[in-house]
Image 1 (cartoon, rainbow, N blue to C red):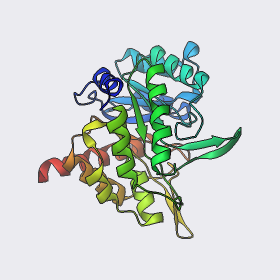
Image 2 (cartoon, rainbow, N blue to C red; image 1 turned 60 degrees about the horizontal axis):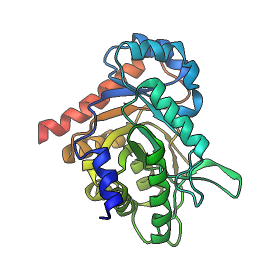
Image 3 (cartoon, rainbow, N blue to C red; image 1 turned 90 degrees about the vertical axis):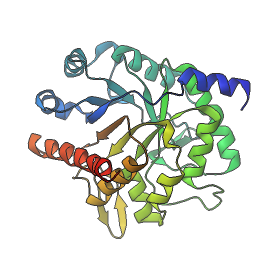
Image 4 (cartoon, rainbow, N blue to C red; image 1 turned 135 degrees about the vertical axis):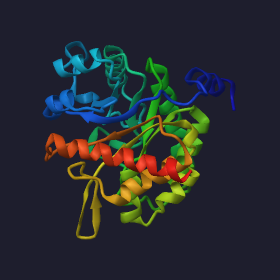
Length: 287
């Protein structure tokens, strides 16, 4: 490891991630539900949906109660050929400072090129050259942020034909080079298994879970043989089984439920959090 890489890893620290508990993605449509819901330990907010200088009253209230809030970016495009936008990085940094966040998360995804927006979080080509470029992009992002960065694996409906590494190998090498944290979305692992035949358990075995920052859980649906990760339904049991598998390999600092539309009742959301806790407990009982 080079001296700059060693310094960057030391700055992030080699200790386990911040203990977060079980949380839920904050959405304006769920503000009152989350405020009155018992058992929520932390929150995640889509960074592009807030203004750091004018935080929503609900987030201010929940922060005052002591709940950690993690800004979660969706548009940085750190997996692209171009360096990450200084303006987008500045916004993520400002969100982290305004919320006194323990970390920032984003997607390891390709979202734009040549000034054109893809409109989706697309998988990156997993080649050595792509790894070189993304490593530099991650370093630039880390240097611009006041807190550690965690990157999320994305859901895919296709794979690039010239991939040289598996997703787990790519993430492991990226972690080795940069010390970046991992936000592992078990629903996305399930999506890639369903759509591309990529074993989710094999991925868990190969991922550097010692750099785990937290975990996502979400639901979706199958349509014409394709699994769509929509965050609009209850998580299928297969996704929770993967959470149990992950917890059997490492203790996640936090596990967060994502729900982005077709919002259910408070009772349904509380039930989902209970299912998450039960899946985590299964790993402890069998350990």
